[in-house]
Image (cartoon, rainbow, N blue to C red; front, side, top):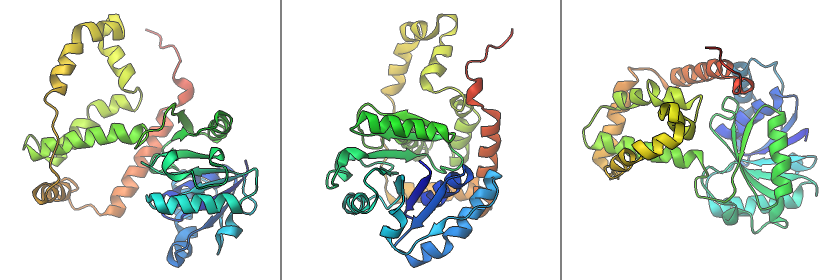
Length: 303
């Protein structure tokens, strides 16, 4: 797959375009919003600078048909609306070449919600990136045709991504469900007055977040079991997990909580602008990616 069509020129579309271009692929893009099309090339160029890639330019099209007419892969990045995506995915498939694969970047919606109005739903798949796609390697895949999903997984691996394949569709997929569980408890801790926004964030970034960047929850607890590994952990410390689970809360998203979140974030950012925070995040993500090479996952450490 060498010809990519980006449909939706917002944050995710910009980021995907920059990544695809950095891998030597041709990119066409379309958005029905004039202002989104007008700023697209400049925003893509900025993301390519972050990647350290040579400048390349997408072709910004003025119609959906023009954007998809030569596409091998069409990437939909429209707002999270079932009705909008249903119609758009169906239109994209009718206009694209018959052999083209269609993927949706939806962060929460299910394949069965958005693909069934298309002529060939089995040739449409979920390919959810984690934001920002040009810097975070995860792509969550789900589709009803195993061959299509396998082709997509092979493609994303070939361009440096790390796809995971869902065996069953689920609202929010995998990563966002895990993130939502943590976010819910963070809000509960704030609402209960346990700690400040800044300290709750630091409890993640200076603690489990460091381990999560190199080992997910299951491997983390495997090591938590010491020499006995996960079996020992489950047998001897499993009850302590259930004890904690019973105390987890459900925050009430009322105006007081919203005000506390906003005030806490403003205090935690110490006057930094969003532009500064984005730049800081992206620079650290680049450094982290360089430090964590998937090829080193199974390298034996000499003791």
